[in-house]
Length: 316
Image (cartoon, rainbow, N blue to C red; front, side, top):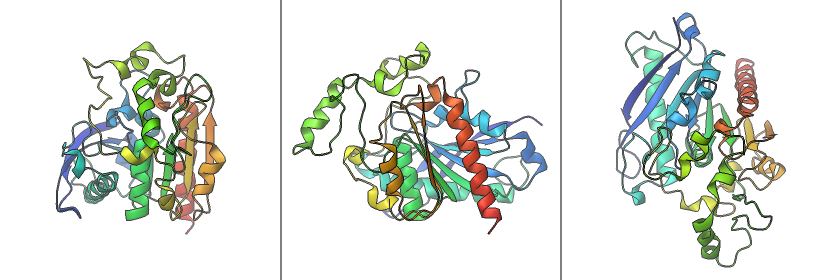
C-alpha cells in the first residue's frame, strides 16, 4: 500500500484561558505503517507566514514529509491557531503560549486516535515508538514552549529558530536587524519596513516560484499563511532562554549559512539541562530551509536525529 496523507480538523477542548479552537493538521503515513505498530513520529510546525504545507511541497524533490515517509517515519504537520486552515481568533487571544497549549491538546488527541485506530477509516491502530517535535522559525518557538510547558516530545529539533537572540540577516554587514543592545527597540523594529526578505529567506539558487512568492500580496501561495499567532516577542533577546534552559530531552539545532541565529555555540549553550545537544550549519541555505538546493542535507540530519532519539528511548 502506498504512502497515505489525510487532513483532519480537531478541537482543542477548553484551554487555560477559557477558549477552545479547532486546528487543521495533515497526517502522512508511510506504507510500512500498515505492517508495523511501532514507528517514529515527527510533528512539524511552520514558521511565521507559512502553513503546514511548507513541509509537503508538491513539486518533486521538495517534500520533507515524503523524505521522512520514505524512511518509515509518520509525519504530523499542524497549522497553529491563526495559521492556514485553523481557526483565526483575535490576535490578543493567540499568544505563543496559548498556541503551544492548543497544539499540545490537538497532538494528544491525534496520538490517542492513532493508537486506537480511530483517526481515519482504513488505518489500523499505530503506537508511535517516539515523538519528535520539529519547529521552523516561529514554529520552533512554539515547539519549545510545547516542550517546556507540556512535555510534548521525546526530542526537539529547532530549525532556524533562536532561543538566544534573533538576528535577521542583511546584504550589508552591520545592517542586520537585531534588538540586542538597543536602548530603543522600536528603532530596531522600524527597520522591518525595509527588510530584504528575499535575501534573508532564500539562497540565490532557490527557484523563482518559491523566492518571489513571499513578496506576492495578490495571490497567496499554497504554503503561505496571511495570519500568524502573536509572535511579537520573538525578536526580543533572551525571549525564550528560560524555557530552553529547562528542557531535558535531546536537542537538534539546524540552521542555514544565512539564518536568524546569532551563532551556533550560543544556541547550544542555551539548552543547559539537556545532555544531548547537536547542531549543523548547512551551506548555501538561507532561513527557509525546505526551498534550498541543499535541503536534503538538513533532512538527512533530521533523519539521523529521529533514529537517535528512538534508539535512546528503546535503551531505557
